[in-house]
Amino acid sequence: MNDLYNNKKVLWSLLAVFILVWLYALGVRTLVPPDEGRYAEMAREMFASGDWITTRLNGIKYFEKPPLQTWMNALSFAAFGLGEWQARLWTGLCGLLGVLLSGYAGSRVFGPRVGFYAALALGSSLFWVASGQIDSLDMSLSGMMAIVLCSVLVAQRDDATASEQRNWMLLCWTGMALAVLAKGLIGLVLPGAVLVLYSLLSGDFAIWKRLHLGKGLLLFFAVATPWFVLVGLRNPEQPHFFFVHEHWERFFLKTHHREGAWYYFFVLLAPGILPWLGILPQALLAAGRRRAETRFQPRLLLLIWSVFIFTFFSYSSSKLPGYILPIFPALALLLAAYLETAPRRSRIIAAGLLVLIGIAGIIAVPQMVNVGVRHASETRLLVAYQPWVLAAAIITAAGGAVALLHARHLRRDLTVLTMALAGFAATELILTGFEPYGAMRAGKTAALKMLPELKADTPIYSVATYEQSMTFYLRRPVTLVDYWDEFTFGLSQQPELSIPKVEQFVERWQQHSKAGVKALAIISPEKYAELKQQGLTMRVVVQDTRRVVVANL
Image 1 (cartoon, rainbow, N blue to C red):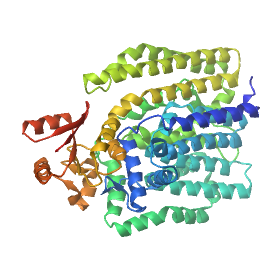
Image 2: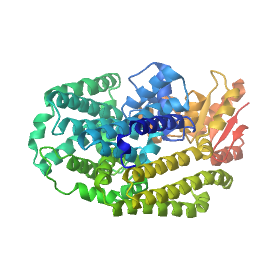
Image 3: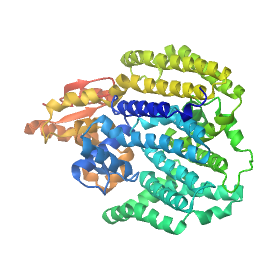
C-alpha cells in the first residue's frame, strides 16, 4: 500500500468525497460575526443596489478592502439567491483551488507522490480547512496567492517548455492582480520581495529574464487598475484612505489596536498546521539544506516564501490570525517534499505527537465551558458543543494511533493518508458543532423574530452597538446610534447616515411614538437597562444574553 498516489481510483474517490464534504459544510452554520456578517452584508448591498464600484457596509461607504470578495459573493447571490452557503462559496472555492494547485505544482515540480502528499497536507491543515469554511478575506487573498506561488513553481521548473513558462507566468501575473483586488498592495509586494530574496540567496539573477515582465506588467495593470481608477473618480477621498491609512498606517502604527506580541503567529501556527506539527521543523530544516539542484531551486523559494511572509506580518503593528494563511500552501509543499523521503523515525514522531495532542484534547474538553462566556446561561451552549470537540479529539488520537502503526510497518502512503483524514475530520467536527453557539453570537434567532414586526419603511436603530450578522439576516441596513468604530471614515463623509448621540435617538424615538410610527431598536442589555431607568417606553420584542430588541409601539 505504498503506491496509493498512482492509484487513479483511490485518487478520484478521495477527491470526490473531499469536495462534496467541503462544499456541503459551507451551509451548515450561521454567519458568525464580525467577518462573516460583514462581508455577506457588503455583497448583499452591492447585489441589491447594483453599484459594483463603491463598496458599502450598512449603507455607509466602506473602503477598508478592495472589492474582489464582495464581487464574488454578490455574483453568488445573483446566481443562487441569498444564503449562508452562497456567502461562503467564494472562499470555499478559493480553499479548494489552493489544495488542487498545490497538488498539481507538487506533482509537476517534485513528482506525483509529492503532489499527492501536498494536497493531503494542505487539505487537512486545521487553519486552511477552517478558513476555507469561513466568509473572510484571508482565504480570498490566499487562494490568489496560491495561484502566484504555484504558477511560479511550474513555470520556472527546469524542464518547462518556452510556451509553458510564458503561459504559467502570465497566470502568475493575473494571480498577483487578483490578490491586489482581494486585499491590497501586499498582493504585489509580498511575491515581489520573495523573488528579490530568492535571486539574492540562490544567485539565480537570470530568473528576472524568465518572468515575462513586459507582458506580465501589462496584464497585471489591465486586471488590477480599472476598479481603483473608477472608485477614485467617484469617491475622491478613497485613494488616501486606502493607500495611506489602510496600508502604511496599519502596518507601522498602532491605530487599529491589533498589535500582538512578537510570538503571536508562532502561537497560531502550532495548532494551525495540525496534524503536521510533528514533521514541520524537520521539513523546514531540510528545505534549508543546499542541494545539487540545477537552475531553479524550488525548495529554497518555498522556504523564503514561508519565512518572509511570516516575518513580515510578525513585524506589523496590526496582527490578526488570518494574515499568515498565504504561507500554508508553501508549507504543505515543503512538508510533502520531506515526507517523500523522511525516515521512519520522523513519521513515527509525527504520528505519536498527534496521539498526544488528541489525548490532551480529551483531557481539556471539560474545561472549555469557561472559555469566552459572557453570561452564565451561555454555558449550556458550550456544554452542547463539548461532544463535538470530544469526538474531534478522539478522532485525532485514533488517527494518530493508526498512522503510528502504519509508520512502524513502513506504509508510507497510508501513514500520510491516515493523518490527513484524521485532521480533516476533526476540523470539520469542530466547525460543525460550533453552530448553536455561533448562531447565538450572530443573533440570527433575534433577527428572524424581528421580521414579522417589520414593514418596508419601519425604522431600525442600533444603539451603541452594531450587530454585523443581524443586518444580513434582516436584509436591510440599520441606523447607527452613538457607534463609530470601522464606520468612522464613512460617517465623516456622510454624517447624516447616523445619529451621533443617544440623547438624539431618544428624542427621535419619542417623536415616532407620538406620530404613531412603529420603530425598532437593537440595544445591548446594559444600555437597555440604562434607557429603561430613564423611563423610555420600550416593548421587548426578543431578548438574549447579548442583545435586546425593542419596539416603541
